[in-house]
Length: 243
Image 1 (cartoon, rainbow, N blue to C red):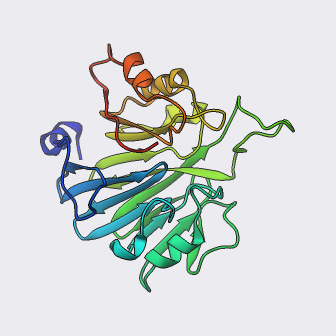
Image 2: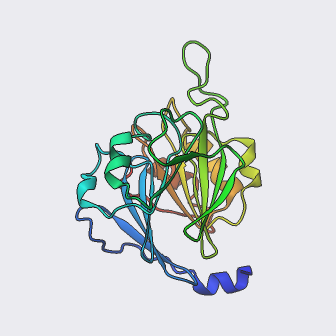
């Protein structure tokens, strides 16, 4: 879809009501159906696209998933416990659920498939591109990165032409220059595991999303990011309950 036609269909509402009481949700219009994004918390998100239910990193400590819609698609960015929760995956899984995880997520959940950086799949009409997510600067005491290259994924999801980037746990890595035409971006911002507000602002200025959500920001004030980008009218920073 050409950019001119795409922006005819692009409208972002500030808050939309979902059936999940107590959780914020925004809605974006696409050429095919509304995309509802529910902010479960931390790194956990739900994308409802028409009748399709797409979960990213569902964490059972943040919600009672027995009361949520069953998943059509589940994406796991990496193996850390605040992102990879096998019990939550099993609770949301149904026989037709497609599950994609990064290479370090072991043991594999039932019916799961591994995606490596650079892999791309079509799943229920959604294009899923696995992109790199790793640390360059921040390391553990033993000198190893908190997130080594190749262990985790970010994901670019394309819903009827609307492209959403969920970065996973990463820093502002060079590969972000290869990610284009992003309407909605989720960028992590907490130390020592991901980025400072300054690093996140630099990543946003490379990606140029229309709407930027800081997420995974426990211990960091997201308003600092909004202040850093306040002079950039092309990027709207939205702060939701994702600490």
